[in-house]
Each structure stands twice: as structure tokens, then as C-alpha cells.
Image 1 (cartoon, rainbow, N blue to C red):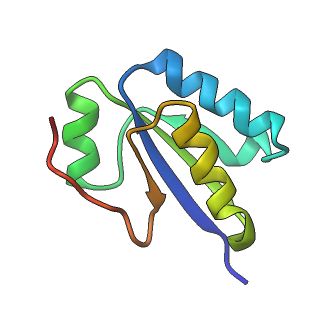
Image 2 (image 1 turned 180 degrees about the vertical axis):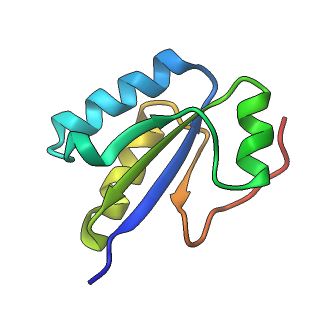
Length: 91
């Protein structure tokens, strides 16, 4: 089964880095979790240019929801698998 990438947006880098630490504490492989300086799509580019920070996590399909839940608990206002992001208007 193919891995899924979960992406999450945070209002500031400090919260994003805390989320990365929480994922690592939950045994997500450090090499597969990163704070991304630029996005994969126009929506994310606009959010990053507005000062948001993008975190990506590559995970096995059965751990996707756990990654999303951790990211949301750590303050992400957007966290969804890359293949089906829940796009909303930038604020």
C-alpha cells in the first residue's frame, strides 16, 4: 500500500516545530516529517507568503489520521492528506 502525505498549516513556525516534535515523539520517522519552506500548490503558496508555516508528514495509510490528529492538537488550522485537502479561503 502506498504512503500518504499529510500537510498542515500553522500560523507560526514555533507551533509548527512543536508539532514536528510531537510527531517524532509518536514514532513518526524524522526523515519523513519536515517543515516545508514552500508549498505544493497555489493555496499553500499564498498561505506561506502570508506568513504561515507548512509541515508535511509522509505516513503509512493506517497512520494518516493519527498524524492529522497530532498536527491539529498542536495548533494546525489546516491538516489534510495531500490527495484530498480541505481547501478554504485564506484569512
